[in-house]
Length: 285
Length: 285
Image (cartoon, rainbow over all chains, first blue to last red; front, side, top):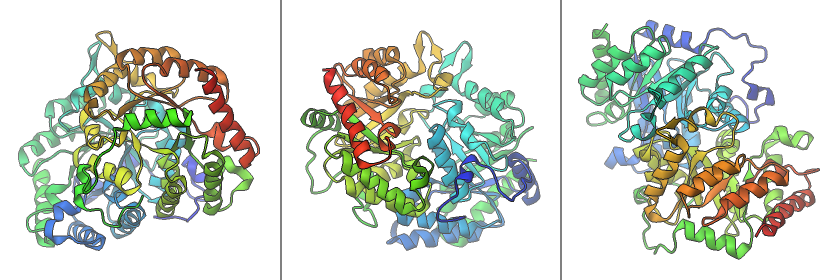
C-alpha cells in the first residue's frame, strides 16, 4: 500500500524495478482459491444509512469495516472495496480506504471495484492509483470506450482486470443485450477480452441474476475467471450462478450487504453469514 | 465545496434543504456561455511527466494548476478536472482537488471528469462525492450499465450530467459503432439520454474527431449540450466540430494539453493559447 508519496514515473508503465514478476493474476487467483477452499468475495460497500443507529461519525464506519474484516479474515478469498463508498467522504474517505487496505494485509486478495472507463494517459493514471498507490491485486473496468480503456490496466501480468460484461442490474439490457448479426454486445465484449488476455490476467464481471447468460458467456471464454455479483441472501441464484460459472474457469462469488450488514451487525452475525456462504459453495463441488 | 466532514443523508437524494432550486443545469450552462462569450472548457489533466524538468514535488503540480487557473480565469467558461490525475496521489491528491475547486471558485462552471458508471446505491455515493462533497456543477457518466447508471446523477436539476456517447479515442468504434437494425450503439445511447432529460440537465460527450458523427448525433438530440473533447492544437477539427455541434444545442469545446502545457509552460504562453481558442470560436459565429 501507499508505496511512496510521489510515485516514480516508471510505475505508470506497470513495470517493476528490482522485482521479478512471479505469477499471472489468473494463476494467483486460482491457487489462492484452491488453498483457501473459498470462492467468497466480500464486497466492502459500507454506508451510514445501512448502519442506521449504529453510526454517527466516520470512525463508526471505520470501526465497522475493521469488524467485518476481522470476522471474515479466514473465510473471504477476496475483499472488494467499492471506491464510491470511500470517495463520498473526500480525502478523509481515501484515508479510510488506505487503512482498510492495511487491515486486509496479505491474507486475502483485493479487487478495487472502481469500474473506471477511460483511455490512454488517463487510464494509466487510474492504474497507477489503484495498483501502485492503493496496492489492489485487481480492478474492475468498464469497456464502453473499447480496448483503449482496458489495455493500460493489463500491462503487469500479476495484476488482474475484471471487465464489465453482462451486469446484474435491472437496466443492464438497455445496451448490453443489443444484438448485432446474432451477437449481443456483452458477447462482443467477452470476445474482445479473450483476445486481449495475452498476459493471463483478464476476467469478466458477470451478474448472478441469470444462469443462462453466465453459461452463454462461459462458452465464449472457457477459462477466464468470472466475478459474479448480484447474489442475494437466498441460495437459489447462488447455486445456479456458481455451477454455471465455475467450470473450466473460476467463479468468484461476491456478497456485499448480505454479509457486511448481516443480522444485528455483530461480528458473530457477520461471521456466521460469511461461513454459510463458503460452506454452501463447498457443498456444490 | 467540502460542505461538511459528514454529509447528512438527505444529500444522497440530491434534494436541497432550505434552498430553492433556481435554474436547470442546461439553462445555467447556456446563460453562462452567452454571458462570458466563451465556449472553452479547460481540462485539468496535470501530470508530472508533462511538466518535465519543472516538476519535483506535488506542490509543483499544485502551483502549475493555480497558474493555469489564474491565467485563464476570464477565458474559460468551464474547468474540467480529470479525477484520475488527482486520485493517482491518494488522499494528498484528493486534497489537491479540493484546493483546485476552491481556486476556481464561482467564476467558471466545473465538470468532474469522472466517467463513473455504476448503479443504484453505488451511483448515489458517487453523486454525493462529486456534487455534494467536491461541489462540481456537472459530471461525466458512462452508460454501459444502462439507465440505472445515469438516473441517480440526474435528480438535482441544477447539476448536469454528460453521458459518454461517441468518444474520440482510436478504439471508440470497438463497441460504440456496433449497428443493430440500422442504429449504432452511440445513437441508442443518445436516444435514451434524450428520453431521460426530464430535468433539463443532461448532455452528451461527443468526440471532436468526426464532424459527421457530431451531426449524426445532433439530429437525434436537437437541443442537448455537447461536451466535445479530442480537439488538437490545430484549428481544422475545431471548426468542423464546433459548427456541427453548436447548432440548436450548445457545443462546449474541451482543450486540455494544448492549453495547460502550452509553449514554455509560462502563464503568458498558457493565456495566449486559451485566448486563441476563445477568439477562433468567436469568429465562427
